[in-house]
Structure formats: structure tokens, C-alpha cells
Amino acid sequence: MVLDYICLNTVIRFFMYRLVSFALLFFIPNHLLSQIFPTEGSKLNYRLVGFSFPQMKGGKYTLEIAAGYYSNTDSFNRNIIKPIDCNTNKIIAEIPAFGNVYTWRVVPAGKHSVKSTLHHFSTLASPKTDTAISRLRIISKAKKYKDAYVFIDRMQAMYDMEGKPVWFLPDTSYLVNKISNAIDMKLSPEKTITFIMNDKIKEVNYRGTVLWIGPNTGEVSGDTSEYYHHEFTRLMNGHYMVMGNEEVAWPLPDYKPDSNMETDILRDSNNVYRQKLKFGTIIEYDEKGRVVWAWKSSGYFKHSDVYKYKTEKGRFQVMDVHENSFFFDERSRVIYVSCRDINQVLKVKYPDGKVTAVYGNRYNADNTVTENVLFSGQHSVKISGDGNLYLFNNNVVPTERPKLMVMQEPYEPGGDLKTMWEYVCTPDGMTDHERAYYENQKERIRMKDQNNNRKKVHFTSGGNVMELPDQSIFASMNGPSSKVFIVTKDKEIIWSAIPEQKDANDTLWEAAPIYRASIIADKKDLEELIWKSEGKKGQ
Image 1 (cartoon, rainbow, N blue to C red):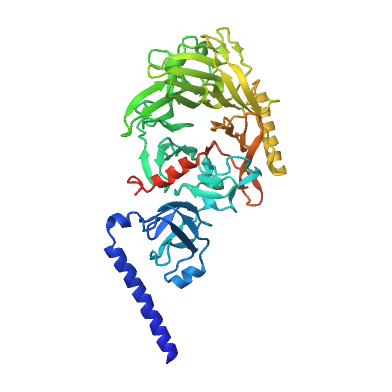
Image 2 (cartoon, rainbow, N blue to C red):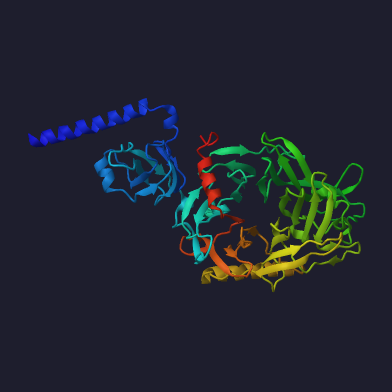
């Protein structure tokens, strides 16, 4: 009889609790409900959670979070992870794991304060954050920037400086070998996240809600697609700028055909031979996806030194100049364009599109090349805070390692760059398996280039550089080493790590073939990224 009474009492208390909770939610004004985040039943793609709630009397609070779903306070109290004191009604807290359910509430300061109702949310599980599949292995612990966070683009995830995943892109595009084709993932000036994936340019908020997708109609390329690649950036004025491709049937007045016509040589109705060449475009879109400015490298190269560089048969030796990065210096209204396969950096005046300087190789009319000694196979060209040009130099000479380069531009037209600082990258921290793979790839490419009678090894599948507030440089190396690190101007490594994935047999770890990594070094930027996801666009 007593047991029946206890059971009945428990059932009544449970239904009374749910009834009161429902009543509270029903009668709480909408403007107060909108202040509660995470909202009831939210499914989050991150572990750094912005908690917000209505202001209460006193202005001091304790945030309590418990692992698991609890509907009564007794069970909740027994499973609180850690109470967090705060002086505002908004706080960012890290929760332990993905693929879990959490219950939370707010306790205002004071003996007679009224505790909030229990709220619930969960974190999504994803292979992108499964550390049995992919990981960021720390080589050197952070001596500075300990609160920074790093995007690894092809893993579609963000990690803290201890190598723990804290965010992932909630998208189903997760390809073979656990690595996707997302590239150039980074924080925008608007504190959103931009990237290129599957020939689409996208902007999302912290929740992964798509805010903007660029058109891809071929309006600039003249084809069915713009063929977006390498670099996509949101500008300070709210516009978007991206690299694309344009294929041009280039006239060859000096071409000498033989009996075996080459597949990339065409002959039109006027008996003019043309060579199919790939050139780059840079497109600027406004917020509505309208083209407001575009530049085509073909217009420049037709009148450049490269145009004179031909074989004895009269065809062009440079098949693909391979534009692989740009940087728009919005202060000076100049765009710097890196062309990897001809080892050149172009300086383009905006908006007229005139090339005002060329740094790197010189291609001569007698089919010789004057090779620059500073960089080759370069990626990720940028301008530093003090106005110097800096880049990731893949340094495709067989005996050389990649370098980070900072160079001063010449004061006079036609002058040369002057090296102000450089750092030679190392593969330190690689496992024996990774190092063997690295050396095997290096030898394979060297032999391939020997067979093609090429002087240089093109080992150039990525690389990135970003200047930090203290002028240290965050860098990511190209594959297959894929190391990410921070180096000071005194050439001290103050943090380094290697993104890794399991091999095809799921037995050995190997360096993941990332394209670019990027960093959020400023705590305020991170906070703004998180809080903006609560805004109108992110709903």
C-alpha cells in the first residue's frame, strides 16, 4: 500500500512538473523565450556553446550543465558537470562531447532566487569529429595563442590548440578516405565562415546554416560553369571575391602541324590553328549574387612575356599558368595574383585591371627563362600589416624545403623584391610511416619530372600563410606533410600539429591531404562568430 502511494505520488509529481513547465513556457512572453539559447531540443554541431537567458534580478548567475536528459531536479543535481559563475546573461561554455544529450538551467544569485526551468539540447555525432578516424596530433604545445582555434578545410572541422575538435560543418558531403573536397575554409570579416566545395562558393554561420551561395552560371567564363577554385573571400564592403577559370582557344600563327595532330590543337573554318589554354578569372559578386567586377588573366597574358614563350613548332610551352591565390588589398585597391606554374606574382590595379608589376620569372622571346631566385611553385600571397608581400614558397627545387617568405616591394617600377625574412619549413613530428610516404612521394614526383625533362620538381599542392597580431605567422604546409604551425619573427615554433587520418586499411595514421588551414586567433572574433549565429540570418 505504501509502495503504491509512493509510485502514485511520483507519477503525480512528474505530471505536475511537466504541466508547470508547459504553463511557464506558454505564458512567458515571446521576447523572453527568444533570449533562451540553446533552444529546447536544439541539435548542435559544436561543443563551444553560447548560452543566453533573460536577465534576472541581481545580475549574477550560475550556469549549471548536466550530461544527459533530466526532467527532475534531483537527477539533474546529481549529474551536473561543473557550475559556471557569470556576471552577464550571456556566456560561452565548452561541453565535453559530441553525440550526447545535455540538460541546463540558470541559478540567479541570492538565497531566495528562483531557479530557471530545465532546458535540453544535444550535440550531433559526425565522422568529422570522430578521433578514431581523423585527428589533429599536437607536436609542439602552444606557448602563445592558447585560446586560438584552427580550421582544417578538408576535414571540415575546427580544433582547439590541444587538438580537440570543437566544431564541424553539418553537411553530408563526406567523401572516400574520410576527407572531403572542401577548401579554403576561414573566418570572414563579417564573422561568418566561407569555403569552396563541389564547385560552389558558400557562406555559413556557426550553426552551419547557409547564408549565401554564389551563382555559377558561367557569365564570366563564357562556359556552363565558372569553375571556382583555390580562393574565396568575403570583402570588407560585404561583397564576395572568388577565383575561377576560363578556357581560351588561343590563335597560333606560327604553328607547324605534322601528321599527328595534338588533341589540344584546334583548326577553325579559316584554317587558323588554336591551342586550348586555361586561364584564370577573378570575380566580384555583390550580396545579391550579381557580377559587379571581373578580371581575366587571358587579357593580360596575350600581351605579356609568356605570350612569346613557344616551342619550335609554335605552340605555347605554358599550358596552364595556374592562378592559385589572390589577395585584395582594399586599402590600396590592389590585387596580388599568384601564378604557380610560371612562378610569377602579378600586381593588378583595381578596378581598371591593369597589371602594374610582375614579380618572379621572366619569359624571353628567344624561348629562355630568367628564373627568379626567391620563390617557385608559390601559394597564398598576401600583404602584411606593415605593407610587405608575404607568401608560402613551395620552393620546387629538389634540394630545397618549402619556405615562408616576407619581401619588400621595389620603390621603382621594374625593380626586384627584397627578402626581409624567411623561414625554412621542416617535417618535424612526422611518424616513420608518414616520413616514408613523404619521401616516396618526393621521389615519385622527381622521377616523373626527370622523364618529362623538367628542371624542377613541382611539389605544390597547397600551403597557406596568415599574419597574426604580433607578426608571428600561422602556416599550413602542402601535402603530403600537411603540418600546421605558428612561428615567431625570431623563428621560434610556438605551436605545431599534424592533421592525420587512418589509411585505407584503417590501421596506420598518415598525414591528411589538406589544402589550407586557417586560424581564429582573436577571442573577440570567436565570440562574435558564436553570437551572430543567434541572429536573424541564422534562425
